[in-house]
Length: 208
Ligand SMILES: N[C@@H](CCC(=O)N[C@@H](CS)C(=O)NCC(=O)O)C(=O)O
Image 1 (tube, rainbow, N blue to C red):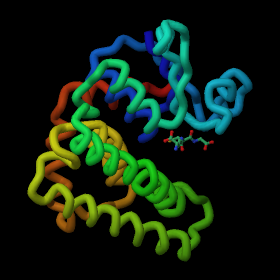
Image 2 (image 1 turned 60 degrees about the horizontal axis):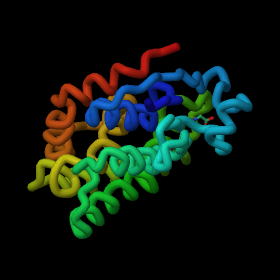
Image 3 (image 1 turned 135 degrees about the vertical axis):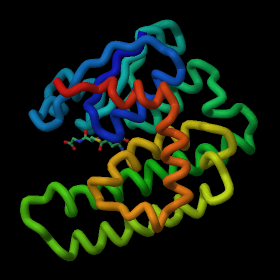
Image 4 (image 1 turned 45 degrees about the vertical axis):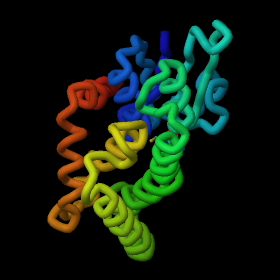
């Protein structure tokens, strides 16, 4: 059994989408990050960095429970546990998936997170922060749009790369992204969003 500690954010939804794609049964434990649940001692035992998501697999590699934090590490753990093609065994194909997964973890997540902060959430509107991160957000949207110009998916077949990027693009309306500038990414977005497991994964993390 997978115990999922998360909230209905982009990083949390990556994991619920993958769990739905893999057909694994899981219990959802809401960690309300607006209320500070991520800093409670029990959660910090799972992730000393105090951020969702985290999982506990009650049947880890050696049959004993294991906890995993960092969404990218969780995606890889679950794909390896189930020997899923969402992380291909073939070295070349796997490397390509890893490239785009790391692009999401190191770029799309942190940078769009900052863009959302300055553009949508910050009580004080700081034009330097808005300009800096909205410019970077638009640059990343262009990189992604170019990548999927002649491809259905980011790295070969549907993979962890798509699953990691998709929940961030779900927030396009919060950044007032103009889809006419990114038509290829829009087609990819609609393709991924049509998957039933993705829809289930998005709605799985209800508010506490
Ligand atoms: N690199 C981490 C980022 C996790 C992260 O930033 N989680 C956010 C929600 S999406 C969070 O828990 N924020 C609460 C806080 O920073 O206090 C991952 O991918 O798991």
